[in-house]
Length: 241
Image (cartoon, rainbow, N blue to C red; front, side, top):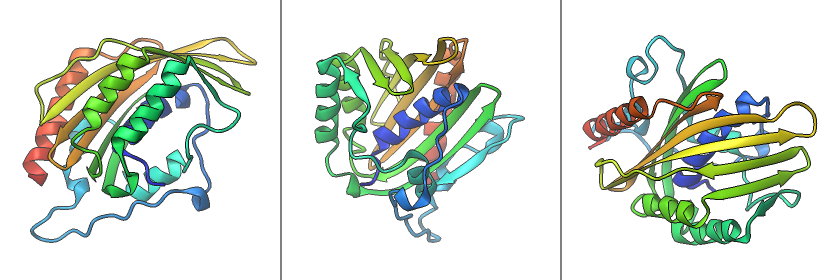
């Protein structure tokens, strides 16, 4: 099962927070979902060309690019939540099921490219994907947040409370949304840890852009994030059409 753009973007946000808490995101290569990269031609730039240049994405920082196959390997190939993970309340379970239905067949995703940068306990990730539910992904996200503003995720390793803030809709592409996310993680050992992130999605034709920034402690700068999202959307449009 290939990952949808929504799940790629959301998982990028979650990975930034969990990485700061010391969680491992390594998945065996044989368990990875496969997303075949689109062939680049002189008339069609590679999708990765639409990612922000490193000096604009993370001035002075180290930027690592990630292919579609590497994203799939990082995120794994899970058909829903593992059996030992419980999500409450039921409204959130229903919202996830509705989102999966709204996003349709994930095999329709054609290509994925991304990049990330990390500094200490903070990080930023950018994802571009083509095909699949690009036209509906923003509405699916906002509907899910409205139906599930707070979720509790219980695992054998601890419990996380995920809270979504008010959704904003910048005037970008065909549709766009920015969602603040706060995660409070209580583990069996060690103190409770809190992380904050901002997740942005921009739908533009058959392409979707996902941008996430976050980490432990202080919430990300919302104005700076909005500027970066707008820059990323404009660069992708200029480069890829």
